[in-house]
Length: 180
Image 1 (cartoon, rainbow, N blue to C red):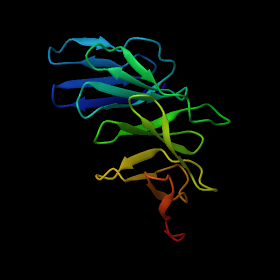
Image 2 (image 1 turned 90 degrees about the horizontal axis):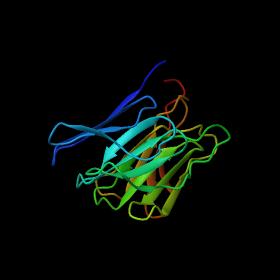
Image 3 (image 1 turned 90 degrees about the vertical axis):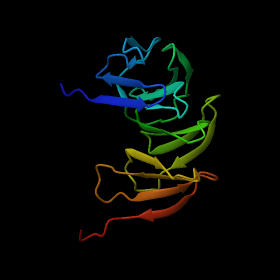
């Protein structure tokens, strides 16, 4: 079985988080002593990111789950609602945290990106992919926090899309030339 390993890193205080397969994510802090994230997490962790302050991290994965954890204790602080519906199995492919640490965006099955309030788990904005787009697996934030870019799928003809954070609308859609 292919085991995907995911890593997260924050420089101050120095911390690393890692997960592989269906095992719980593990944190290493300044002491170098590992401790597993506590609580229930069902399925595979496919992404881990630390918040800018280094006090929290978020995991994303199969089952459509995204969980915000305390970096100090390894205890869950908030489980985001399962917002990535699909006819198949739900999964959150990637998560990015805004520079202010107050919002995050998840990209998952059901062809959706969702911007969440990091303190409450409230859905702030839904980025619904355009008709005919199969799905995207990567999300990035513009440095100013006003735009989100999604792209990279298994379908060569799916576009890269730039979204407005303010209203969730598609600002730019870039497709590969047909003869590429």
